[in-house]
Each structure stands twice: as structure tokens, then as C-alpha cells.
Length: 319
Image 1 (tube, rainbow, N blue to C red):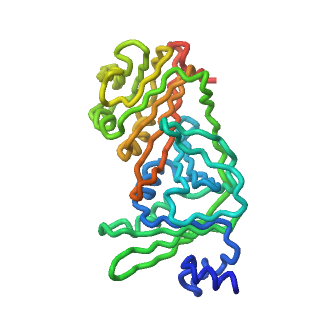
Image 2: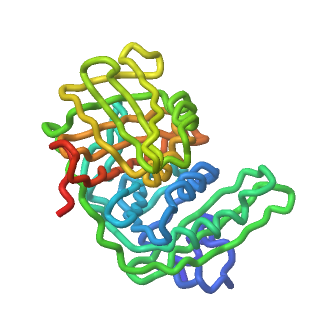
């Protein structure tokens, strides 16, 4: 009862009669976003499959989704994004993006669980209309417990609602290898200008080819339709669109455009993008998104290249 009283005083519990909240006498994790609009937009952008793995650590929240082991998206909501952030037994750091816009670190989270991301974003959408600022509190007791979400709209009515989202066992996630000595090219790009250029591509195309080279044209994107027709655009390393450019080897790899369209959902929100490829043709895109309170949310994508018997040695085998 003393713990419940303390939580009520701190505003974590809003109504003693709410059954889901009354179960939280020993909360393992609690966090508050004063304005969760950008968090909602990012969660929607990566919800191309229903179920996600959520990882909680002392440095923030990590949400991972994967489709057919071919494309993976990870959203990093760092501790700096939250006005309140508490998790029991902090001991390791969550991966964050360094000054060069690259995600670093690979530490084990304190807690992992599965979550239906579509259900979760549907809950958040209730307070996304009308242009009001809305806050979000998240509460999690531990293994097997639901994720409790408390939404409050800042308006004259002061509406408050509570959602309890069932959790499940964490899903198995591929650990993509992007060792530094295997990286062939690293490009840092201005987000909005790059997205505007990508938006002009044929959205009905089947494949996209990305060429990165130390020699001109340096960066080239080409799309191919089912009839083999090609359209392309090039970016030189002197372009104002590029923040930095480094390439040691020429690589040219094709990817399913359907997978690349999933990435573009997040690129629409980006302020900066870091693009990498390795010797196997694995494409990595790291996206920095500015939050409403001067903090940043980061999203990282890995996209597997197409397997083709006629592809060059940079392609990943189909075995």
C-alpha cells in the first residue's frame, strides 16, 4: 500500500480503481514522454510486420522488427527523449548513434519481450488527432506482465486513457555482421534532400541497384521495372547533399524495391542518413530523427541484397 501511495503522489498511477495499474506495486520499468508524436510516427513507420521485439536498458528503449530475414529495422529511443526514465538494476548501455551518425555498441538489454506493434500504435493513435500535445507513460512490471500505456491530452478536457497491451516472448532476431574492416563505403547524407530525390523514383519498379565507388559518379541509384527498363540518378562526392563520403572499393548490388520502400517510410522523417555497404552487399542505413525536445530518435535498417546466379562476387549467396 505504501508503494501504491507513493506512485499516486508521483503521478505514475492516476486512478487507484484502474485494475491494470493496481497490479503495479513493484514496477520494473517506467518512462514518460511529454510529447509522443514523433515516437508514434517512428513506431508506425517501422510497423511493416505485426510483432516486434522490445528491449529495455538503462540507456533507452529499442524496438526491432524483421521481415522474412531480409530486412530489419531497429528504432532507438534514447533515455534523453524521456522526461522520466526508470528501470531496475541498470548495468549496460544501449546502442546509440555517435557524432558521425553511426550506431555503436552492442550490449545486452536488461529486459526483452515481444509486442504486437500494430495494436500498440493503434492505442497511441487515439490521441493523435486534433493537433494537441499528448504525453505518454509506459509501465512494465516484468516477464509475462502487460505493457501499460497511459495517455494524457493537454487540452481543456484533460482527457486521460489507459491501455494494457499484452506482451509475449521475445522473438529471435538476426545479428547482422557489419565489422568495420568489411565496410566498403560510408556516406552521410542530408535527410530531407535525399528523401526528395528518392521520391522521384518509379514506385512501381521491381528492383533498385545501388552503386558506391571511390570514382565518379561515386553514388548512383538505378531502378528497374519488370520489362528491364532503367532509370537512375547520380550524386558526386562534391554534392552539397553529402555531409561526408568515404569509399575504398566499388560495389554494385541490387535489392528488392519493396524492401527499400519500407526504409523510405522512415527517411521521410530524417534529418541525417548514414549509408553503409559491406563486401557481401549488405546495406545498412542509419537514420537520425529530431524529436520535439531537441533530443534524437535513431532508426537503423539492414537490407539483404538480391541473390542472383549472374551476380558478381559482392552478392550474398542464396544458401
